[in-house]
Image (tube, rainbow, N blue to C red; front, side, top):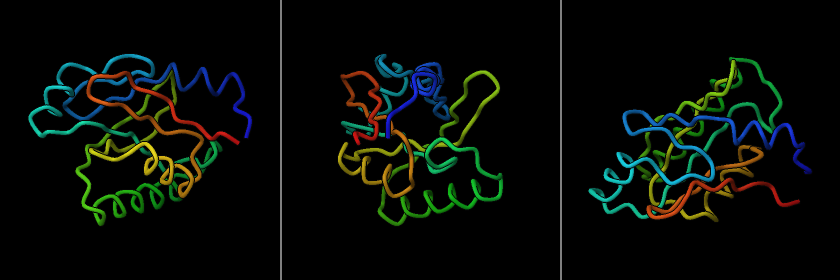
Length: 135
C-alpha cells in the first residue's frame, strides 16, 4: 500500500496522549515522565498499537469499539502491560494502547492482524518511529 502524502502528514501531526505519562510525537524523544516510568519498570521499548479505522478508512463507532476491545483483550491475554492512549489531530481522535516490552517485529504483526497502516515503536533512549506497511 502506498501511503498518500496527506496521510503521512496526518501521522506526524498527531499528538499521542499517553494516560498520565505525557505526549508522544513521531520523530521526537519520548517524554521525560514516560522515560522515567519505563526506567522504574525496567522497560526498554514500547509500541503504540491501534485497531480502529482499518487501513485508515473511517469505520462505524460500533465496529471501532469491537476492534479496540479485541486489541485490549489480546494484549492482556499475552500478558503485556498496557496504558491507554488517545491520538488527536485537529478534529480527529482515535484510541490506541501503549504496550511495554514488545519488539518491533511483534508490533508489526499486530499492525497486520488489525489491518493498520502503521504503529509507533520506540526504545527508551530513542525517538518515536513510525513503522509502516512496506508493500
